[in-house]
Amino acid sequence: MNEPTALADDLAGLAVDLARGAAEVVRAGTADHGPVFAKSDAVDLVTRVDRETERWLVEQIGRSRPDDGVLGEEGGERLGHSGVRWVLDPIDGTVNFVLGLPLYAVSVAVQWQGRVVAGAVCNPATGELYRARVGGGAFLEFGGSTAPLLGPRTVALSGAVVGTGFGYDRARRGRQAVVAAALLGRVADIRRLGAASLDLCAVATGRLDAYFEAGLSVWDYSAGALIAAEAGCVVTGLHGEPASERMAVAVGPTVAAEFVALLEELSADAVMDDPAD
Ligand code: LIP
Image (cartoon, rainbow, N blue to C red; front, side):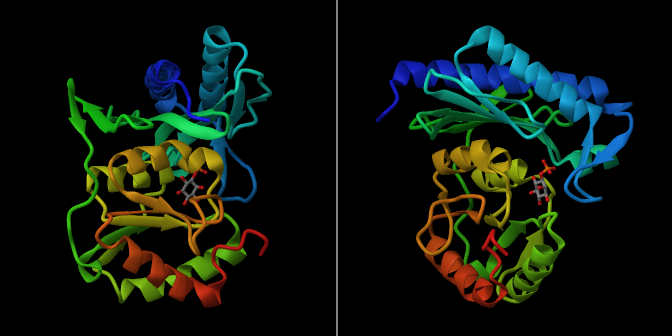
């Protein structure tokens, strides 16, 4: 069922306000993020700033739209009965945040009856805010100006600069590395930025020609995937599947079929995108 446009516009506006406000919470905690805790693995990190930012987001949503559902990376989950659900990553790229590498973002996506209809990704370190509403295009707000996002340049796959990432599961990470190494001989170069939401926004902005990653969480990619799609990118999984936790791909339309076919060829042996493994 198509969401009412007025609802999508309202949700899009709130997503931007939430991402911008949460970025202020992150900025306030950047100088002293306190102790760092490990989650699923010693390298899967979380700080009090992640948790405080997610609490702030959940409180704001509760005030503005008390009947909505919420799913947050740091455990903020609430069932709703409005048909709207917010999917939150308070700090996507936490390892970068802990290191002081300015490549991390607040990612806010909002679903209507299970479909993402709006999203906002804000980098607290740079102030860049990427946003999209389904059917309304994608935009970058920075330094007081707003620019439409038009996706990657036209380039041959052999000349493409491709972003990727590696999960925390060490067995899968080994197989992902095999695929990345094989890919390196077929493209111009690879980038590993460390925050899926910003990787996806980089493709939307034309700063990367393509991106792929297996094993993301829904809060990592939901907003960035809509922004990339609304910028005219092909956003997909492999083998005809949609983008998901198994595999998220964003790529310019001129090389999309070739890139996806190459990933399917290279990952066949590595079984890279099987979450069961
Ligand atoms: C990160 C992702 C990144 C991935 C990392 C990690 P987090 O999310 O954005 O693309 O490669 O392993 O999952 O954990 O920083 O929110």
